[in-house]
Image 1: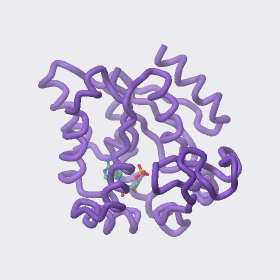
Image 2: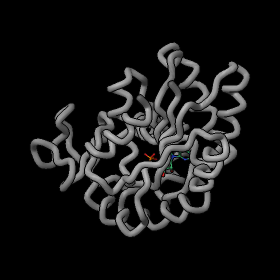
Image 3: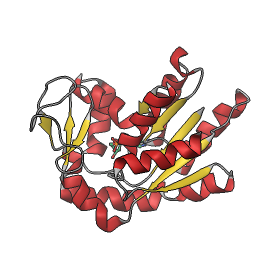
Length: 213
Ligand code: AMP
C-alpha cells in the first residue's frame, strides 16, 4: 500500500504517518527527516537544504525528487510506504506518478489531515522535536514523559528553527501556494480521503484506519 500524507505544516500528519507505518508495517518516509539528518551530519545536501528550510521555503524540486526516488527504490519499500512531507508541489507529484507508472503501480491513498490555519500557529509553537531520532512531541497534546527529554532516545527536545512563529507564517503561505493544489490533484485521481485533523490524535487515527482498512 502506497500512502501519501497531505496537510498543512503542524496539522499532525507526521504523527499520523508514524502510527500508520507502525500499524501496517510500512516504512515511514519523511523528506524533512532526511534533510534534517543530512544537516546534522554536515553533508553537502544538508547545507543546501538548510538555506531553504530555515526560511520556511521548500527545498528545490530537483534535489528533493532525487532524494525521494533513491529512498523508495530501497528493498524495504517493495510492499509500499507512507510518505510524509512528499510530494509538496505538483511537479513532485507528477514525477512520483510517472515513476510509479513505469513500474505499473500507483498511489493508493492520499490522506489529507485537514486543520484550519487559525489552529496551526498555536499548535506549532507547542511542538518539540528530538534532533537525534526525529521523534516529535507537543507540550500539551503529546507531552514527553519527562519534560524536555525524548522518550525514545533520551536526547534533549527543542523547538525546531522552522517551527518558530515567524517561520510558520511563511510555511503556511508556501503551503497554500504550492502544496494545497495537490488536494485537487489527488481528488481528480480518485485517491483523496480527508479527515478532520482538529480531533484528538487517536480519533484522527481511527478515522484513517477506517479508510485504509
Ligand atoms: P517537514 O519536516 O516535512 O515539515 O519539512 C521541513 C522542511 O523541509 C520544509 O519546510 C521544507 O523546507 C523541507 N522539505 C521537506 N519535504 C520537502 C519536499 N517534499 N519538497 C521541498 N521541501 C521539503
